[in-house]
Length: 297
Length: 250
Image (tube, rainbow over all chains, first blue to last red; front, side, top):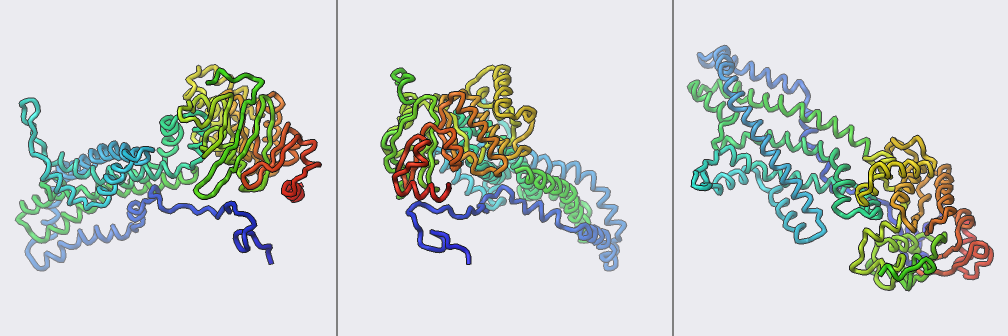
């Protein structure tokens, strides 16, 4: 039998604290890459069979109607340049700007959350939690209806296009989630780093910018890219705001082809595939980077 | 405030320091002085407040009552210039705490350049000399992750020395090391002590304490139970708690 350890399995012999085993906190959201993991976990055959069903659906449909597979795909191929250049590139543009603004605002918000002053910390936490936990579509509608459709600057009337409102609406949840990524990354740096810098006469600001954040940067890239993929997937929401993106244009194209039901699967199946083709490499790189940086920590 | 201090007065003076974490009183009235050039070892059982005490000396922990002065400057004065204090007091930690994104040489050079705004060429020259002093020539461009524990700890010592401190604090610096690398760190500290640096060490290395200390303090349950020069401390300890502690580890 092993010897009894005072304070653990026998009466303590001192009133001083006993060091309990250290538990790694699981609360940090920094490595939460569920979306990217899910995306790359989808086996290739699933996408191939989806593609096959897109190809085969018009065959099945043509049995019932006179509209043939050839005609459905001819319609799709005719419209692809229009859908991609006019629509999908716009999705990419919206996601790009929303990410840019959301990241800049999110970094500021994340740093505010770790401020020593409660007057800065608390509002930042409230803003973060509010936008993190709101439905994106609701945020989009609020922004659409709350923002004026034109502003007057120095006597000049400037129209705010819908896509700009969409960018603003989408950057809000991104901002909140990036803020959380920044906060999680800063908190994941061991407190010894703060103490070492402090004992070397660094101010809090210097510690943050020269010691802590450079260590966070690498850790933040994978979750940041994960959020970019999620954001890109969310851009079709903008079609509800009347923004002329991929889904809006697909619908218009279907309407132009007399709203034939045979067209639904080829067109929306194509939309699905193009998003997959765009996000899958991002997810792959995200997971690869996460693996690479995880080793060095 | 600083002007009143001269070298014949204690460089570090600790008077009746009390410190609590919540309901737990860790330091219950600790008093001692350290003269310039002295090497002080603080020993005692785990949880006796040793580490807390030296962390209070450079203001990493604050105190509840009492006074700690470094070169006449009260460490816990509300208007303290922390930069001035920390230029005077260097500290080495149990877990080394090197900056993992910088090379060994950059670790040593960073604080003098960024904090003290010193000239980069001068700092680099000094940093290379310090790397040599701790026997790490050739490891300048290695990242902390590529170095052994003992090597990292010696870089940490060099990093502290780069700030030209007057007092060095060592907080159980060999406790996290493999037995075979302990010696190289102790050699570096010994060289430093013999060069006249004022050192305050918290340590479990009794043999080392006996060899280099000018004065040994034994703490238990937040108070200094016994102290004396090593020649008498280890052989003539009078307090039963000290004797019990020494009998367990010697």
